[in-house]
Image (cartoon, rainbow, N blue to C red; front, side, top):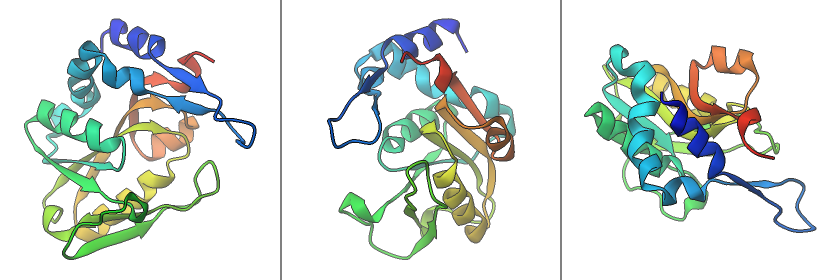
Length: 183
């Protein structure tokens, strides 16, 4: 991956204080989406470590994954499957496979669902997301893949902010480390 992309990701990133009632700062990655060079380079950079493994589909969770997943899928020339959350307001019709994540960095457990008809035996899955801190949602997505008979090849994220043992266990690669983002 070009060093220029990592530098650009850092330059376009911000932390935002959401106010006095908030317990933590909120990441603002909107600059990544506004920059056409970053958009053009994200998909190919995310999938580069997995290209030789020949994924057949990219799976990403709502909400930010719904942007990144298609960029990665397009770079690979494969299809995209969205993982939905009940809080999104619109769940797809038809049979779904559900899983619940372990607690995330804020102690929340997230329910995720994938349409059964879009994921099954023989699929070689690359999971793609914007950020990983605990891997909680990844555990739920890996569980869904296992239930559907699909093989997970690993996870590609923009920002890796999890312990090294989590990254190793979940086969996570990233474009920038959380510690390299401006504070």
